[in-house]
Image (tube, rainbow, N blue to C red; front, side, top):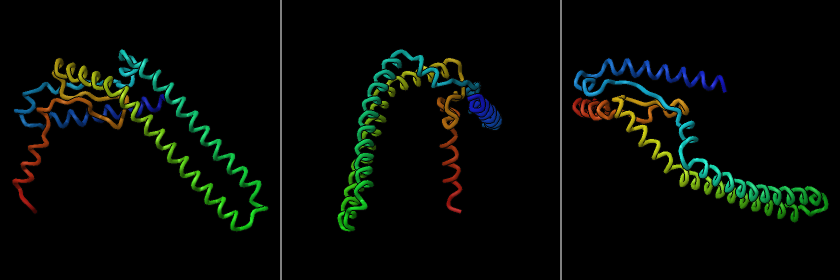
Length: 186
């Protein structure tokens, strides 16, 4: 945990440094529109403290317990079938053994399919319950970013998601595209 926090802080420092260099190199008209300040948040902490999160988390935990119970029952069914096959395989004819193996494979495929369905249901339910909370959080973060005239806001909770809100006047995408198109095909 300590190492993860240290690496996340180090990553933020690197991104802030890169951003500071990048902001210093932007054209004057772009940098004049924004102070270029930087902020960061911990979205995991924010989410856990957002009104409605505890209820959503409790609902998800209860539903996951049901999914897990079904998954355990399915795994038990497969384990029982495998154990029965292990006990019987020595007395089975080669043809009967092959039929049992085919049945076990089909059972395993059905169980794996159902477990995938359960996993998909869980992810969909999580999206249903958490997405509205995340949208509210994003709105507040965007508002604070604009209110404080910040260029970008980083999320220190997720090192893979570096910028979660940005001043769109700093977006150089259209400028890069227009220069590439103006240059034509090499």
